[in-house]
Image (cartoon, rainbow, N blue to C red; front, side):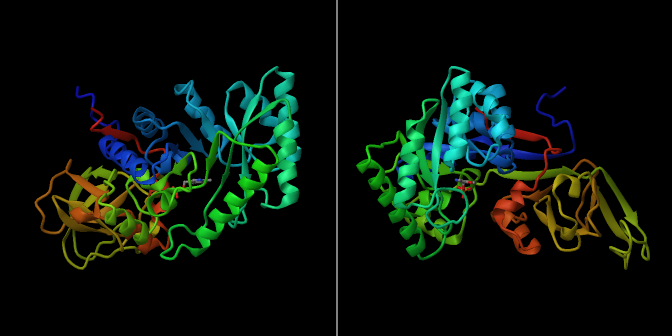
Length: 381
Ligand SMILES: *Cc1c(COP(=O)(O)O)cnc(C)c1O
């Protein structure tokens, strides 16, 4: 038996060498150590597999959105620092402390609670303070009053305030004026805190877009997500990177085997309802994946796969576990592989193409691939 054979005839193939390449390109371009953001199952790449690559490449931190995600990482990565970028309920404080997970903090009240819990366990909880410089999401507004709040947090005996960060809302834009304003607000706030005697080991701001297309402002860390997986936040970040002489490599490919291939007579319907009607005898291939795997129903009759290098339309509605392609005149057999999401340069449907059809963004096009699909890592060396 070949060990590399996936357990299922549909799977996400992840090129580990491409992830490693993207990691090193981002680090080189932004000149900062990286936190690899691996939330939402590493944007669909598979959290443990992707994290293995990034840790090996020298990621100094892993970033996730939720405690559950942090705990999954802790099962394998015992020592690497993990930051939860989002909110964790107060009653989970003990788990944070015990599992040595770093928590984002944006309220004095929660900081006090976490400190107490940590003290009761005779430990310290590492935290990073979040500053809201213009995203209007989580974080202290960078006011003078809030600077004093942060000072109070820093005095709590059960906490180690290891970092401080803010998040860009528009760093992928062509014009960086808003992103620059956010940067200035953050740097001003850091200066205020410094005047009050507070300094931090990790001051961070850049996401992928900022890391690829903006200055690093002398900060200590970049939080890279999307670009690690070979995709650009926008064409402007792509332009910026290419001008610097670098390119991201395609990393995530969705593949499925044709598990059934039949000629369906003219006049027959394909799939549920009246999703597709055969006007002539049609070679219909069945692929064993559907919206339960993240292939939206809306892609039916709109998207395509790549079979032997040629485009084949997805026909009918996508079912929960299966979908259909019209193989046309291509000489195909059961067992042949179809690429449903791949490198657009090969003719495959890219995350950008999927986004256009569905009215979403490329982030979502890969993140929507569900856990049911096995992740197969290649080029692991
Ligand atoms: C998701 C996220 C990132 C990574 O953003 P990308 O655009 O994918 O690089 C960084 N920081 C925070 C706070 C995030 O939520």
